[in-house]
Length: 334
Image (cartoon, rainbow, N blue to C red):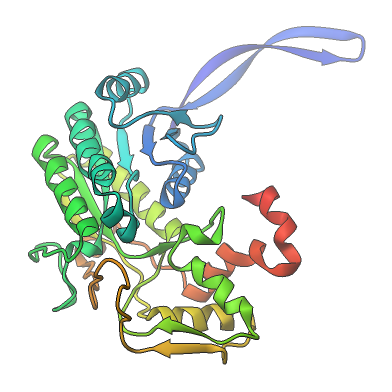
């Protein structure tokens, strides 16, 4: 939806200049996306912007001219952005989402994953706030997990996101928590996602390599998550009772080894050099849940879910610029 304004413009024609009033359509719905420079944040920002929302994206270390640089740990800065833009919806994507990094840099990760949530939730007030959380709040021992199942995170990342959830709901009871699993999508570099990072191993071809074949994962496309966020936001503007915890996940279940094989198949590449590793090696980093499958019936019952994009379709959409004969295109499209 949008409203109509008038704007004076100068029109030039050969031998003639005139000032005319043109109609300008301005979206009346405003959304603030934190972490808009990140993997999920970029997709969320695009989804809203492409669907008639006035969208403001903010980032910090990777902020670019089209995004606002904002330190989410600075209460005055956060307050200034919210009061200045006056969003109807906030989608909080910013996070340290790499479990091994959280283990090594715990204080910085807790600041972003917990304390920034506190600040944002306090300043949000009556604004509808969507907080992106994770399936890692569960221990993976008894899947699938519904929205009301008791969390029991195994690692500091999961604990930090669970604490973030609690801070959001404590200070902003009308907020929504959206838990999602491992994500992939359009990446600036393949290392940006734990799914697309397997691309280099798939392309190696000539040299065999081992890939973990123990833990079950449900790789989910960021464009699908972004559509769910927009569905939730648009429903919340009509029905303020939309709040609480929601789950969204793709349904294709794979280990990392199976993900790599599926990537190879999608690009018609050999996979015989990929070797499944059926035991976790010592020193493998932060402990991960064995199978944290999310049960997503609440979104589905409300008609807010979306059909997940088939993995092979989505991975081709994500990785095609990184093929050896197309790497020049990365600077154009990413």
